[in-house]
Amino acid sequence: MTAAQRSTPREYLEALLIAALFLLFTNTFVIKTFFIPSGSMEETLLVGDHLFVNRFIFGPADNALEKMLLPLRSPRRGDIVIFRSPERPTVDLVKRLIGLPGDTIQLINKQLYVNGQKVAEAPYVEHKDSRTFPNRPYLSEQMRLRDNFGPVTVPEGRYFCMGDNRDFSYDSRFWGTVPADYLKGRAFVIYWSFGGGTSDGTWRGAGSKLKEIANTVIGFPAKTRWSRTFHLPK
Image (tube, rainbow, N blue to C red; front, side, top):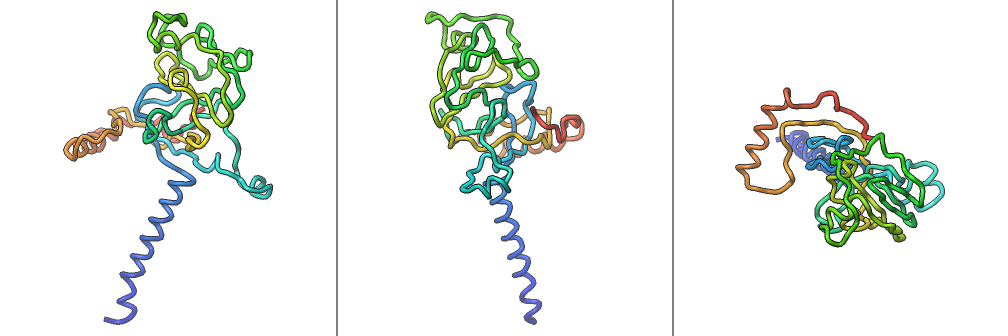
């Protein structure tokens, strides 16, 4: 075997390692994939939507040159953000960022107020339950905090997030604010939307996983929501 022949497998291995490192770096620091397992963001995001998440946008910039050259910025009200759950940090959640550090948040009969100003949420918020619950101690937490909440002030270094499917979202009204270092990025684009059932991320064994993959492959042509491909969620 010649030196050239011996080097070919090594070149392929090096190329694969470089590609793997590049993908790992990209998935960790720049673009990450995320899928929607629940309906808390309907109709903005549907169960089965698969997203690219911009992890780079909230990255730290150490000097003025970096801030000028790189597309970095601080989180803004209205951003659709992916973050680690304050209750279960191993689980990622997606919600809309409603309150910045120092903001005062209040809900009065489902209407959102930020710093005392009424917020027009009609383009994206859904209210699917016509009932309005008062904030009374005899009601369950899920009922009494859903429609009438606060006022509360968002602490420094934290954010207040809620789902667009406002009547059926478990969010900052119930588990509090999100630490800044829990933010993972901003929802960028839906690259695929599948209406044929989506895993909730729970491992139920190899057999269940294989069945899930088979159902996805079989249902891909008919159950893919083609109109949502490359849709930009807002």
